[in-house]
Image (cartoon, rainbow, N blue to C red):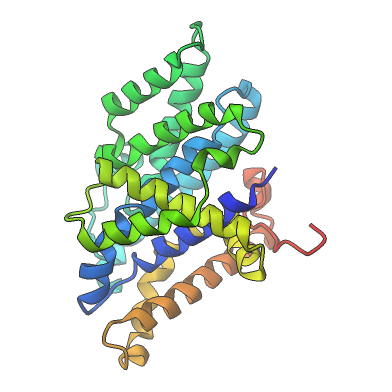
Length: 318
């Protein structure tokens, strides 16, 4: 069952991810806005992923979902690697890779290209947490959650510990939410969360991800977004919840599309801050990602992976 407040939050987060993977040519967006957004948007995504994951699934159910994500990861990550290593310089890619078997295996198993590190981390943590849940130990006292924190720290997947640790935080919050009838109550949705967010944005230095300030920023952001979704069930909220239901295809296709943003950058030259360029590019890239996912399913590529990639826009009846 979908949770509107979570889907809305995910929709906002994925749009921020696209916006700050664009190539900017000024300083305002990458040097002023970018550091604050990066202090919470990936971490919030990771926390929600941990919160939504169900380790109690039997092997058949777990493997069905896991295989789907694994196959998509392999296809898109390898495709991105081949493109970057062959024509990346021509396309203006920010990173350069060498084409070879060793580098290919390194990209798949150790250090994925671009944004695909997020899926790589999820694959490791899903499997790790599912295996931990199956250990013959008492659930009382949160021993499984403790082991998950230790495993995330010990493995240090992708060398992304400051972000990956939020998956374990989300898993912990899922356990704690069992005492609530409405699971989103664990996030304490409130407009008051706006105040510390503003104070952190104005006065914090460095915006460290793995710090009390980082945790406060993530929790306040999620709290504020969920409050907004629950308070204003408008077309705006429903639209971004629809975006939130399609975060996977946006994550998969956006690395191939953000690089095209330089084609229309000159048309936004009137705005020196590049905010207009960022908003327009984000809107266009997200729309193209959704179109690509829709075409993907229409071409019956979904049959190869066992599941649709595109989620239809929710109607009023839903």
